[in-house]
Length: 74
Image (cartoon, rainbow, N blue to C red; front, top):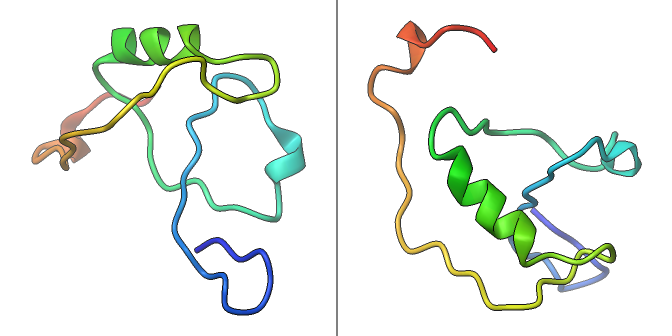
């Protein structure tokens, strides 16, 4: 949940490609990419140092791995 003041609740998430300590204590990690890392490379390629993308990126499908617990630890 994101909140920028009264009556501003919303949802957002971040894809981070490096350590982002300024988010510690403010946001919760809730996922990990376990396959399709080439897609993250493409997304990182349209980003800027300031974080704003140079092109529109849209997630059109996502899901949950059915056999997650059998994956090796990173």
